[in-house]
Amino acid sequence: MSSARVAESSKLLENIFRSINIALVNELKMTFDRMGIDIWEVIEAARTKPFGFTPFYPGPGLGGHCIPLDPFYLSWKAAEYGIWTRFIELAGEINTHMPHYVVDKTVKALNDAGRSIRGAKVLVLGLSYKENIDDDRESPSYEIIELLREAGAMVAYCDPFFPTARPGRKHNLKLASVPCTAESFGQHDAVVLSTGHAQFRDPALYAEVGVLVDSRNAVKLPAGSATRLVRA
Image (cartoon, rainbow, N blue to C red; front, side, top):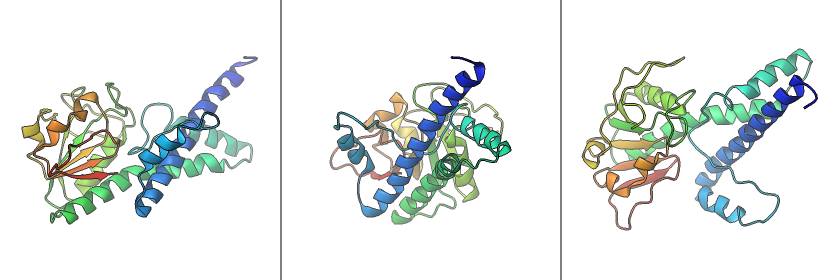
């Protein structure tokens, strides 16, 4: 690179590229869900195009140190030069809404099962911001837990990478992970999969679960399963 400014800008471009494309598939997920179309099947079909398409996948929101923060640094800096970075702001608006969408789907799934969110026992799977790592910076799981609590739910979590939830920049759950077992999962009215750890992909874990809200398309339940599966 010709300068540190160019090198830093290339990193911002890469993060903003991902942020905007994740926002696009998140928006399409909400749109296609209303239409009764499976966004995951749509993405798999689009992936068969040999040129011009890069698959991105929807989820419960953005996490990590880079993508949730860096685009807004550039947006702030651009304002000093009289530029309004509309793509960045719109992508941020969509992505930051996703925890609310997951919670709304959980409330509806419980209602459909004849259970109110108030007083319900809800288990959130995963504190990490992505699967199979022990990094929880800016994880959307924390906001999902807080929103569920605000709605009146009694919330627990399970994450093999976090035996106890450590305090963060904005959160202090003061909780310990419940065991990753079918018996433990079955003690809750609803299970919300926020992070697709490999340990959570075993369908046997959900044998006693009444409602499973899967925001990562991580669980494939066997035919005839009594579990109400909702993609969020």
